[in-house]
Amino acid sequence: MISIKARSGLYLLILLFTFPGGCEKSEVTSIFSVCDQKTVVDRSFFESGPSDLMDIQDVVIERDGLRIKSGARGCSRESWKVELVGSEYAAQTLTADRDIRLSLDREEEGLPYLGKEISFDMTIFKAGSEDVILLFYDSEHQIRYT
Image (spheres, rainbow, N blue to C red):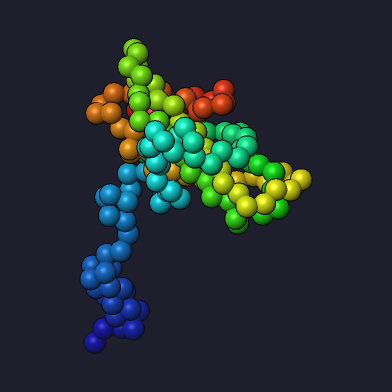
């Protein structure tokens, strides 16, 4: 006869093999389990889309995810619509350069300064195996995406 402890362990092993769970390989390609948003590449939107003032404090790329810490004045972050927009044109210098910008559309304005951290999927900027320098429009920030 199998003890209750042994039986419990056996059931646990059966469950682990029956329902493996975990992440699929495609989900493990970025440090971010899921990026908050996809990046948009659209010349017209880049040039004339919403552009409320938003400060960029920090940018970090790891694998195919870009995390941006930013902030703006407003009453609530809940109504903010933030997108990362890239120009369609990538300048071909020694390393490809691409202009990108944060597009902020907010319904209200207010005095409090509110911070926000958002992550973006950057795979749309992959240029084969080439590195791309992402230049933040109206900011001193730039970052190499490999």
